Structures are given as structure tokens and as C-alpha cells.
Image (tube, rainbow, N blue to C red; front, side, top):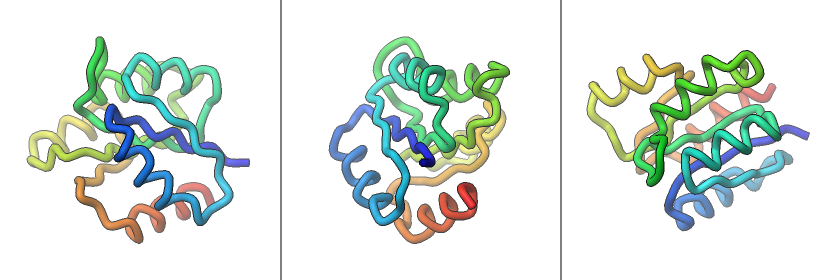
Length: 121
């Protein structure tokens, strides 16, 4: 079974994204901080990570993405930044940190599902 990790400090956002993805047959994992996301990614090796940028704690989404992409055990994970930070400079920073794609909140559930379906296919 495919695994998707949703990383966002707001539980309501994690639940909304999970409901959006619940039409598929993937196992959904949750993290509310960068530290937690790193731990889960290293232990569970999800196929896709939906990663917010602004989070409490030591690591923001840019840090998490960069650390995961530098680690040989997790660099293969497809990372989609899913964030309210919609400025071009933020998108460029996200992609430079290793993100494979960038979605701005509010996002189109259908576009997100299409992207995930294509990645998991």
C-alpha cells in the first residue's frame, strides 16, 4: 500500500487534505511539525509528502525538504509543498530546497489528486 505523509501544524488542514485524498487506497500519515515529519519520513518511508512551510519548532518546510533530499534513505520521496506562501520567491526557494512540486493554499483538490495519482502510478 502506498503511503502519503501530510505535514501541517494545523489539524484542520491535515484533516481537509486527508478527506481530499480518502478516495484513494493510500495509507495516510500525519505530522504537525518539521521534527515529527523527519522522524516519520525516516521510519515509514512514505511515497509522497505534502509539506507545509510555516511550522513551529526547529525546522520549517524548507529545512525538512532540504534534509530529506540530502539523505540517501529519503531522497527518493516525492515532496509537494502545500502552503499559503504564494510569492514567486517562496516557490523558487521551495523548489531550490528540493521540492518536486508546489501547490498554493487554497488549492484545487482535483489538481492535487491528479498530481498524486500520476506520482503513484
